[in-house]
Length: 344
Image (cartoon, rainbow, N blue to C red; front, side, top):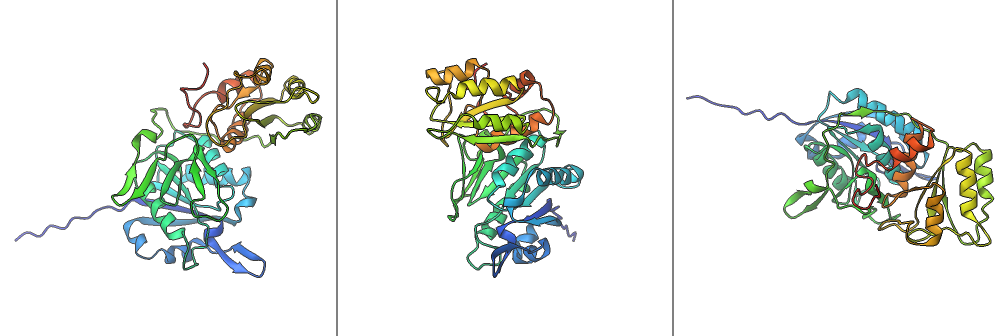
């Protein structure tokens, strides 16, 4: 009698910890990120038996302190280990997770493996934490055949360039803005929406050059346009302006279009998006928007502010030529911009 044993190779997952609420403990001064990966790993219980998980404690920080230097550290870590693992999970604080996922999408362009960011609204040590469910989903995507950067949260998977944090305390903290969810969890299990995945045959490109001299400005009625003078003095290289509605900039009494020209003349690239979270901007509809386009601003269409800022940082890290910046910004790299509404 012959006995056969079937050995199923477990997916090898690199779990990179960066701190955040999921790794926090209570202190006299509130929650602080303190727990290392091994402590969090032990809290996952039987979940760990389904994967071959290796932990790498990159740093332990509140995500409010995660900045371009940390984005580079995460990208370098993944790039160095890219051939050693089937997928990656990054546990991260929620406050700046959408910025990190957007920037990683550009720095790890066309990555052929899943990189999944997740976290929680309550620490993993809390008995009612949402962290276990979020980790379960993140590991499922990291162990899948998906390619790209994702955010896994509250039984939904979001493309990295489309994630936005929309709630401060609710477990439904993130939404996919202007783009379908990549996957959802229901009574049938993990429902992958393959039409929402990034599809391209381009080679993987690692480029972590970033320019941090980028400023995000949200317009308000009555704002003094002379604020742009300060940006020129600070030698800012790029500005993202959140304009009104589908594309409004004041030019009566307070002329922002005139100041935009001064920015462009100072070789400062200017991107204009909408303050509205959903749907696109279109600066060709109204007179005020047309004036801005005529002067050379770059339209963001349906991109999130997080994607606009990080994409501009990444582009300016490679070139400061305004025409090249425009061409690169209007190119769709990681489904951050809808080609069907973008003007050619």
